[in-house]
Image (cartoon, rainbow, N blue to C red; front, side, top):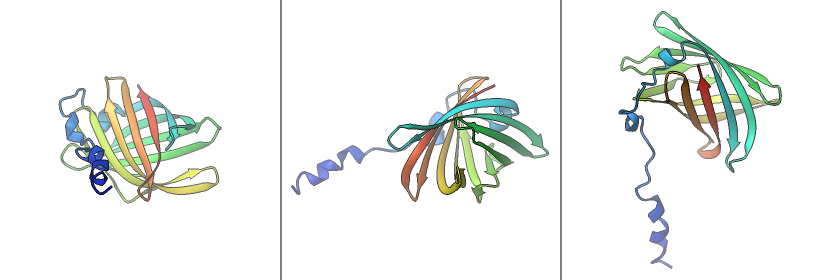
Length: 171
């Protein structure tokens, strides 16, 4: 059995997650302050770690500049009728990327972009019904053209997969 144990690790060797720089050659650029300026709408799903769709939602968004800041208001409506809001404030970091804050986000959500990709990591207290959960988000945005951005977010709690969000934004 000692011989076979190292073989069990072979599928893990060479497995590396993408970095935002892997998307440098793709266009158009995913600049949050450009794509999300004005009104946009998103349609999404939350899937649990087994891949089962648990919630569907629509999000109406409005972004605008406020001096050097970019503000993005999100109004969520879930398939069960629940409504939630998130109000982001993004500050430029000086390298073309942004860091964001929102009332339910713990600390700052650093973000970086390259090519058509934007990646942001953050921890947030998320309400679901009468409960609240502190969750970690690995949030990726991929701009496809002037009208569509695809969003994929891995959601974890204490390092354990909770599920994922799949979302399409339309302008």
